[in-house]
Amino acid sequence: MKTKYYPIQLLQNDSGELNELVEQLLFGDWSSAEIDKVKENLKYFFCTFRSDLHLIVESNYVDSVYRDSYYNYYSTKRNNYSRYCLKISFFDTDFNYNIDFNDVDNIQKNYLGYLIVRPLLRCIGKNIIKPEAKVNYCKDIKICRVNLETSCFGVKLKAEGFPHASQDSETMTCAETTLWSLLEYYGNKYNLYKPINHSEIRRAIEPFSYERMLPSKGLTYNQISVALREFGFGPKIYLKNNYSNKNKFFELIACYIESGIPLALALTNSKLGHAVVCIGRKDVNKQDVTNYSFNTEINNKKLYNWNLAVAHGEIVFNDDNYPNYQLTTLTKPCSYYTSNEWDTMEVTQFIAPLYNKVYMEADSAIELSKSIVDMIISGGNNNIIKTFLTSCRSYREYITKSKSLSNDEKAALLQIEMPKFVWITELSTIDELNENKINTLLILDATGSKSSNIYANIILLVSEGILYKYEYIDKVLKGYKTSFPKTFDAFKGNLK
Image 1 (cartoon, rainbow, N blue to C red):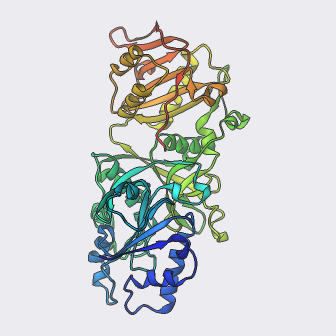
Image 2: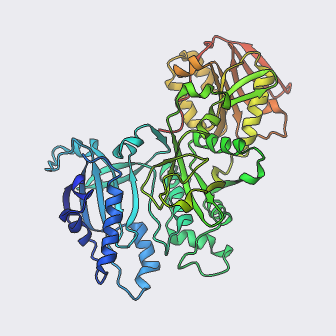
Image 3: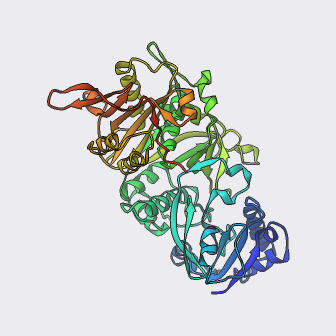
């Protein structure tokens, strides 16, 4: 394996360095037109990054994802395909490319992620890169992030971001790529799951297919859901046509985004169908949340809906037709496409890959939260309401780090029994929101059900200095005066 250094700006133009890079892919008998296409794909990808970055290129690299496709498909074709890829590591401005192995910290501190370049026309393979490496429009985004262990120069590193790849159109279409990236994310983030290669995806779906699966013709959304279930998830499919009010459908998408759950979205119009992964959002202007459009009336209370504001803001997609981290909106999801035929694309359904013991879905959690706020909390008018799912572990960590709670209050909260996942609803005024404070906290049991006693779903409710708990023996909700402050720290969120 050989390594070579390039300033990225030399690869953002037609240059001798770009030609040199492409030649390392060992294309064999490819035509000049095909090689030019590869150059264009690479140059377009590099142009979405800052021009002050440093790149280290490793040739003859063995990538497990490409090798899986190679041995199951490309090696059986008449034309020769190389077994090897290029691995390109991205480093920040202060990287010292005159490598000093006594200064490993310089390598680690400046590492931004990597890209696998495949010896295919659609050459952009697996990549996981920090959004901070991208051009300016990515600096205000919050996404689901995972750390993947990797290395460069033999130095152990962690690549941070969301997994992305382009489709190769033969073993991977948009549906397979969407499914692979979800499994790559969860498999590296949680011990419960594992990263899955494309051959394993095909084997899982094969019993539900009625024709050959290679070359790939794509997957239906039911097949994607079946695969997720086979790999340990409890997926939930949401269809836009099931909601008379599209705002409700978009609110559910935003609720899952705030929960840090990447979604598989189906985009369709009369001619086209496409799948993308929704992985986050742009920062929300907190003052805009009190826009009348995001008003939620609950009997005599007027609340402003945070999730609805998120739904009408800018959303982050990973689209296998484009480089990672595309900003768009749910109402015009393909706004970054240049072809007019994509203008009329709509989000028609989405799949939420839930933990299989999360029985309460987003729509039930939202409705229950609103009902509880209406029935129990006397105040709250003109407050902002925010509902999301999070893990018990993440929420307990937030409690321990909170600066607005005393040690006794933290200890009391940490002793409350919770399932693996909980639904959280927070209320705050606009002034409190600007200070990242809340005045009301509601924790719901994610293993609960809206068909049971509504109060039995409440794990904890704190509002106006009163702590409410459901007493299972008496089967009633009881309130206790506490020393909890009137406002305390909001949960920092599941996105980074």
